[in-house]
Length: 478
Image (cartoon, rainbow, N blue to C red; front, side):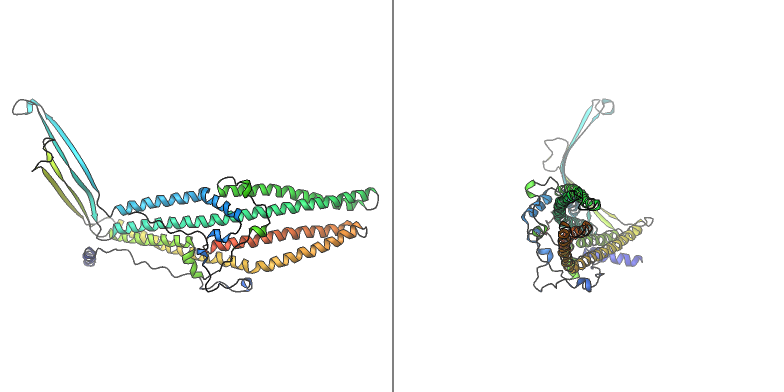
């Protein structure tokens, strides 16, 4: 065993090798194609020349200009995104610290020392003052990186830095989708409020007619009270959605990081604002390159892989160099004269012999961290696959749901029109008109919900497929 260790040490010293394992990306722990079945029948196949979602900028995806401006405000002011950017700066600085260990550290110094000897201790019987001046350059302990310890520390720092950049990308894509969904939810609740107000106005008119007929003895009191229940229901819904619109605006302001200007708040129909570019689903393997959270998990795995090299290097000798050079003199004027030069050179070899198993335990920990990172990477891939599959399943059924809901609204409108007309002509009680009115109101609310679901699904697909702004990574300075 000792012979093999010394052989490895000799080879490493000659080659300046790294003891980190060769990195291999784990096999993709998901299917090679998206699920198929009835839920996915409405999902169109991606064209051969389709633009990957990761290359579709959010400005290209969202057509509404107001929504674009709100997203821009969020990207500039959102505090969570600001923290992500600061984490990048922090990781970048740490990487630069790790990289600096590859180079020797030099420092310049000028020193003076003085001492006084009392007269009782000198041969001349007079007190003596001795001074010494020195100046030069010093190289602090510099470790020769024969076994890749410092380089692997630098590699781990680099992967951590790049991982924070991927985290910032993921945070940005999430923020863009959250702002878009919050904006569209606000529109949907505005439409629900408008529907409740229109229903209240309509039912108020019917209620007033019922009161007149009851006062004239034309109809029974039940018709008037039935009409009143419809009025109060609509009044309650109007109050609920008035509050909900205010809550939606507060939620949007939190995401944006500041109050949204009045001129940027939505005022149109959901179908106008939710015009989004078509996106292809691509293949599951595309997620490895397009999803920043998957790439972040892989960066963590690479860093853990490099840390194994650091732990392995602790088993081998370390060589450190300390050197200094300059000049010394008893007088300041003679500090840099000929013959005053000084130098020192102190190499040190540290050979681990017995550490009570610390190095072995550290290597075990490094390998366990690597295995944990593998599992986390695989979980990130599986989560990404599941999120896309869920979005595709919803996308494949939304058109049928929307068509069915629209047909339901049309049928409910006809039923209510007929029953309302019969009641106004005195041919029927208000009960049938009330039942059909409630069915129509529910169907109209359901249509708003379904339209919102369709728009939210398109935003979710854009997010889970890795869409968004992806600039080139700023390279840290070594």
